[in-house]
Image 1 (cartoon, helix red, strand yellow):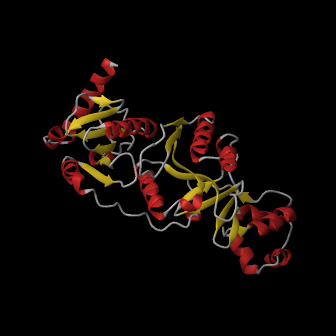
Image 2: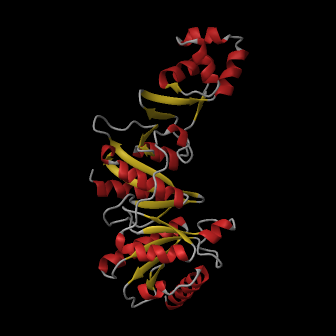
Length: 336
């Protein structure tokens, strides 16, 4: 199956599962293919045939984007170099969860989360230690007796009951011994402790061509996080909104800009394409989108507000920028 077909199948599956799915990020380089949201769950999704092609730089960018957009980075793939990805198993590449299409289908369509995750040394299961301890005591077994049944040490059994994860083989043996499920599902949206991730990667340096824009946005009250492999040049966060406890995704709040997808380049066909993608991703992630250009012949591209370089340099504070965005958004919507 071609990668294009695979992306199409996965996005159709997400739509069937009730997700709002963005347009495909058909620009290069790109760290993710689509963004999707169902209620408060937002994912940034990369779709690959062979997940071994998912490199550290892409993983680092997806993790940063996930932090700034309150989203979960996720890879759906078919295989590794050696074998097909197993159904019902969560893998990790550079700190990002990886699922097979079947596992994703079970999770998003059927509501059945995976129980197994891959880590160095094999496949593992999260044991519910409290349930295990209760079952053992109901059986009136000592730690030593259960250890003997499992072929492990007494100390290892004690660790299982304290929350240590077990191999798939041990988990299966426990369920056979006690006649019931003892495993916790893997929470793809929240199980950071299961990944092999390094600490959150630091932001890259801004492109030298974007430094004047970064300087202006920082001066008027934004924290600017440059990107390297996205359809936008940066994610900009309103410090005042964050300090007041506002949701970072505050696009619908008339008093806050919140988080902005931020683009910058000469306005040509490629820039227009990027602006449309930013608009679609912004709708999914509930963020604003601005694109700073040399000259703008219109107010916006879809929901992405166009601002000329001279205009942005004359912005005095956050309220000036908010007002400019509101005015152009309202004007564009009235003309639509």
